[in-house]
Image (cartoon, rainbow, N blue to C red; front, side):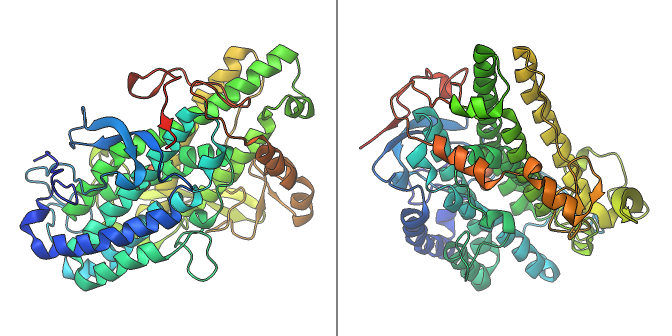
Length: 475
Ligand SMILES: [Fe+2]
Ligand SMILES: [Fe+2]
C-alpha cells in the first residue's frame, strides 16, 4: 500500500493504528521531537509560512503536495517504500534467503548501531544549519533551506520508527538520545565528526548539501540494499527526498559560479581582490571550499580497510551501491579491490580482498558522482569563456581518518613535508580571511524575486512557481 493516513497524529503508511503500543511510544516521542525542533530547528522561523512540499504518497510520481505550512505544524511522519513481493537477501552469506521482516537476533546490536549512526546525522544537519535563515540570499533559497531542514527532521522520524518498532526498550532509549546529542557540543556531540563542524554561511551550506548530503545518498543507497527489509524500504523512500537536497547544493554553487563569471566578464578581470571588491566570490575561493568539504566528507566513509564493513556485508546488513545491478557473485569471497597505499612517501595502488575494501569502494562511487556534478559546474565558466576549471583534490588530501591520517598530501596527490604543508595549505583550504570575506557577504534578502549580489537567480522556481514567487511569508 502507498496511501498515507493523515487523519492520525502521526501520518504514516505502516498501519500504525493497528499496533497500539508502538503508536503510544511514538506519540510519546513526538512532543519531545517538537521540543527539540523548537530549540534546535531553524532560528526565529516558528511563525513563518513556508511554501513546502509534504509527502502524500510514496509513489515516486506525484508523491508531494505543495502548500504554505508553518514548520512546527509540518506533518512529519513515517513513510516506507512499498514492499517488494518475494524480496530476498541479495548478498553475503545469507544470499537467497527471504528478506528479514524482523531483526535477526545475532545482528541486533550491529543493526541498531547502523541505524543510530545514520539517524544521528539527520538532526545534526538541522542543528548545523539553524542560523542560516537569518542571512538568506533570497526567499527562494530560504524556502529550500527550510525544505531540507524539515526533511532531515523526517529522516530522523524514519530512523526512530525503526528503533521503536524493532528494538524494544533499547530502541526507545536510542530515540531519546538522538534528541539529546547536539552538533558541536563538547560534552554530548553528534556521532560523526563532519556533523559537528559549523555550517557558518551559505557557501558552506551549498557545499554541504552538494557533497555531504551526497554521502547521505550513498549511505542510504547501501542501506536500501539491506536484507533487513524495513530498513531497506525506509531508506528507499528517504532517497526520494534526498534528491532535492543534492539539487539545492549543486544548483546553489552553479549560481554562485555563474554570478562570478558574469562579473568577471563585465569588468574584464580575474583578480580575486577586485572581484571581492565587487562583492562576488572569486573562483579560487570556491575551489578551496570544495577542497575542504570534499576531504572532510571523504572521512565519513571510514578507513580504506575495514573489518566492520566486511562484516556488515557478509551478514547482509549493508550492501554496495546498486548491489543488485552488479554482475558478480555478491559474496566477494575471492574478489579484489584496489586501495591506495603509501610506500616511502609515494602513493601507490594495492590490491586487497574486496570484502575488506567496501568503505573505499563506496567512497569511490561517491567520488565519481561528485566528479560528474563538477563537470556540470565547469560548463558555466566554459560557456562564459572563463578559463578556470574546478578540480577535485586527491583522495589523500587533508584526511583525518584511515591511511592518510598524519600525512600531508597535496591536492595533486604528492606526499609533502610538514613545512611545505604549512607554507601552502592557505592556497588549498579556506583561510580565516576567506571565511571572513564570505561571512561579510551574508546579508538578508527577503524581497520576492530579489537575490543577493553574489549569487545568480535560479533558472526556474519551485513546483513551476515563478522565481519571484513569495516562497516564505513572515508572520
Ligand atoms: Fe537526510
Ligand atoms: Fe539530506
